[in-house]
Image (tube, rainbow over the protein chains, first blue to last red):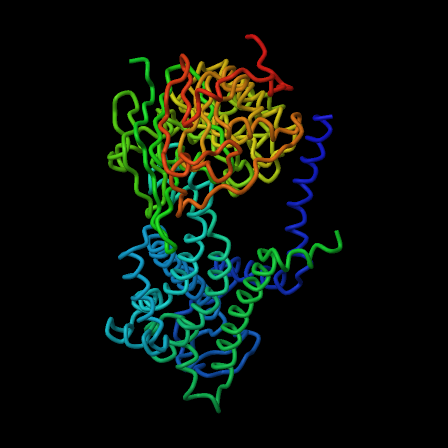
Length: 298
Length: 333
């Protein structure tokens, strides 16, 4: 009897794993997002193979030409190949976006854990700082920090992290407050686990669900913010092929060469959209209330 | 000094918004090495708080007075760092709820292995093997595969076995089992009793079994202490307590067993904020006299090994008809 049960459970477990995948399949938007992101990543990795020209190579004789058979998306005001620049731009946008999202999450999760677990003065201090940060309009605060640090991609990432960590801190603190009262934490304590061990091994994995969702959703936001700040001249500096900056440089030529603004704009839009689709999908899959709806067919 | 644990005049209270809750009021309890002490009482009488006081796991609003001497070391005033060395290695707790006491996001193999890793300083690989061996010894079919499963994939009895495995993995000298049969149905309860019995036979451990189930206590324990409203009201060897209960409350408990006709003890247990004066049981006692409302009886020795907290223990000491019909009596060996 027991053997039969074991077998059943094993099959059931496998089924459950398949269900998560098919949930992703069911959720068309999330699947589209995942596919676009995968394609973007591949293009970024194999950029030198896809593009024929150096993104920095100038040729003033053919400046501001429209798309033709030689230059897929035309050239910019210095005669550089726009297509190459866009493809190389994926590398910059994806890496800065992911790095800034991970950094923001790291700071937020760390402070949230401390505040939730130790409570008392630590909690008060961290939560009041988040209140202060949240009381500023985030764009203005980012602009100020980036402005003070000086125009550079690195500084923008720091500025975004300094403003964005608060939402993680709040979510994580909330989860920790409820998790640390759970009996399994107490029983681990009764078996002699130290505070740090408890935090890392028992509490942290239990509050990662919402964190992963927020992070996926915020990668899109981070890419958009970095492009926006670069557009304002605070981020990447020429001649780096950064999308926001390319957009900015295209503005004076909007009448003569609209492709200089249209293509980078499209690139930003598609990338951000893909991350938002995936984030939304992940939220649906991880939310137990919506889960039942998705699984009704099974 | 055969005492492993000597609790003297332990008082544990909680400061709450409604007042001071006195959960444990002057408990004296001695546990000798190698014996199984059963702590019996109804819900809310302070049994679990007593267990948590020993472990030093009370919430921050708790206040503990008195001494808990473990191998001559007083645990009550010990700083957190020192008591952590004792937890798991010297005294381990098998927690109350098998369904909520395992971390839902960690594999059970890992949860058992971490005790080996933390307490016996085994490297993770060896700790894992030790964990699988431990699960095998608790009759897990195919423990290697089972170790890869998460708590929600196990049944209640299996979770209880995992928790028992975690409890003894640190090879503690004293095991505190906090209501191991709470909320389990009859079949699983027998399983758990069987697990605990195996545990005792295998490790020759000293155990403090906290339970409200007299039957479970009767078939596992060498000695029983009956608790009521934060006090121990009767203690002694299991056989004597069950065959010749002297305190009216103990008699009430035994009479309320299903096999004895489910006769309830009338009334409700008192609020721990406002305890009655005199004998704490007198409002519910059938034999209460005038004195009972004023005089607080002491825990007095009535027989060799038996102590009773009742003003009339001499009169009550008459042999009565056998009240207790244990259905799963302790088997020899």
